[in-house]
Length: 219
Image 1 (cartoon, one colour):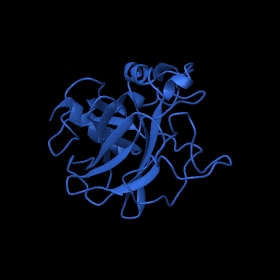
Image 2: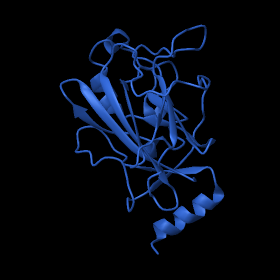
Image 3: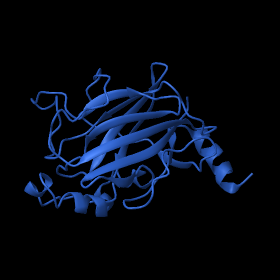
């Protein structure tokens, strides 16, 4: 057995870890979410954060007409011990809008940028949203929870390459807030596993993007 697999088994035994595959940046070809036989890269779980709202709608389209660069997410859930797809997992995502605002918290209303999808036979949950904005003290990110059989089996955050964010933020409406204060390297949460929780992103049309990652869980 390779040394990487031995390390994977020992880390999984310690608990609290996930598998993340398809890690990378913008511009390359996208081979899609990982499946059986994929190379699995371990990353720790991350904090839920203060803006989680339980019981969100089961839906794919979560932007609710908010402006921003279109972003399609293909989030794959795989079994951490085998890398085989997990069908029927509930994937729960939430993030701020292009101007850095979360719905449903701090006196704000609405449900924009929040939703739940079930994974299909290939273990993939899909969302249509917009590229997230930024707020003080945090790198650009998307929150995610994975539920299997009614239990939360993963809580994490998904990130973007800074070079991609720089390019997206040169356009509207992001250019209304030009002074992003925290890049990935300056975010302590990102520094605790964010490099292996970074979405693989490719262009889709003139101003849209597709982001994918595989999240391994102990189902």
